[in-house]
Image 1 (cartoon, rainbow, N blue to C red):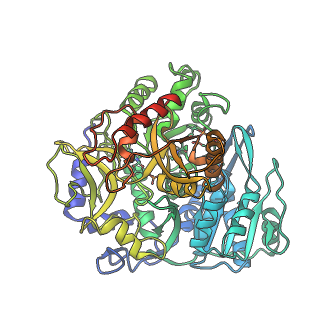
Image 2 (cartoon, protein in one colour):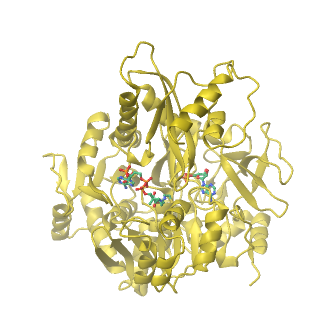
Image 3 (cartoon, rainbow, N blue to C red):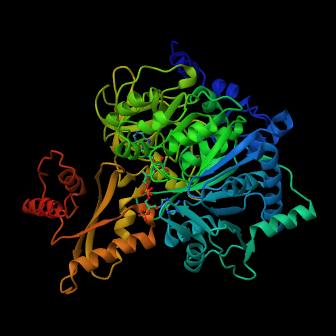
Length: 633
Ligand code: COA
Ligand code: AMP
């Protein structure tokens, strides 16, 4: 089939507002948009400024009304517990209504924030949808973050209520969530009115009288009172959620997602990009704590009346490297979306894909990858072993959906190894040099997106228009700075080479090395430090911290290094995968005192590097190479 991509992209390019006006017709609006884009509103303009709708209505209610009440909406597959649970659209609607009633009973209403700190269980999705129903703004915090990170997010969002569960299940342990939340609340200045706790069989959490409430009892009470709220009329420009993501400092950025534009963009992608139809099973093997989870575990599949899989397991070890294929076979998954890390982990344990052959995965039509660079080697291996299109696509928390991809629904374009293919309609990409001038095709530079960003992308940062301008719009006027370096080749294919800031991608998780440095610097024996991301065969990149100790510190290095590892785990969380701290005498610096992190990374990765002209003392680079060798890096 010839791809319709070029034709559709040209249609968008010729008439962006007409394009999105047509896409908007797939939603059910309370007040349909008469105006499509207002360039004078907000930081760079706002989509659908005069329209109103409700996200929960579009994701749940309308499907029940239209006869999908008996269809399964959510499949919870938890290999760690050995159970599978199905929830129909009808049941989902009931549960969302009852939880929404609980929120209202605690005084939560339109525009109030609700923090959700939960594992991969259906109740987490129900919580998000209940917020959307009443117009409260949810802010989901990934379960792998520790108390300090959670506290920072609680303080920035200022939630009226927090929803949590007693525990999460990792393959090697039960993670008690409630003590982490209690600790976060002790650290935070914000004082939520109430905490709702979903008690799981594996661990019962203790409740603080007056503040904490039992989820099941509260819902039972709401059922008894039988007074559930309807779907609130929300302006398309009202925030649906805030999702915090790593910035270049330890203070995360509160990415705001508006309601109408987001729903329009997601609905468009479900058919045109992912080629999934209502009633089919779509599985995103990620976590609701990440943007990929928000868009394609929750809102995207539910918007079109598909079935979504909530998987509480890993690609390997729960119980083996056939786990993904078992889930695909059991639930007749048509599209699987995961991070390249997951494939690398599977490949390591099952290089011949023997476990893939064990299951009937004939329902599976494509495998989508995102979250980090998909190395050509892994993509080729997967393509050859699975006999499926393996489609890399590039996006960011900020954009909420794919910037560049290969649109299965429009007909696949030929794949170029190492490229996530082409910009989606809505995105005009340029590669620019440091002065903001476009560079010729095939040359590397900073990837920028011409304003306005399409519907679905962040309109601003939570209560911080200025940080939005400074972080993304100021450096290249007229463009959004992606902070990814890359190039566009003569055929218009995009290549992503890596971040231009201090963000690293470890196992598909976005982390700030600057944030880690702030934590390490708080250790009483550390004078200065540098954290870099170094190549990791499975996780893509893993952080490595170099510590210079204060003079006169007599304690042994190994003890301090272990404390540093512990400190990051306690303050940022296990998700940081910070396992390697190395004490060094000095850090390599320029004569003006800038730490040469880029050169250190090249040494660690065994990549060729040029001696920086401004280096203060070249001998330090040999010291760094030596300590890395000693540690087996
Ligand atoms: N709650 C609590 N702890 C969590 C957690 C959660 N939701 N998620 C991860 N962690 C912990 C892990 O248990 C691990 O702890 P450990 O150091 O005690 O082993 C640590 O955080 C690091 O997690 P991770 O980097 O994910 O490593 P892992 O060994 O648990 O799993 C992979 C490795 C490759 C299997 C896993 O990272 C993976 O499937 N990644 C790709 C999919 C994905 O979700 N990508 C996100 C964006 S699409
Ligand atoms: P996140 O906000 O967690 O989605 O991370 C966004 C960052 O992940 C991007 O800025 C990229 O650096 C990286 N990324 C995401 N998808 C890809 C991809 N397909 N190829 C290369 N890098 C990617």
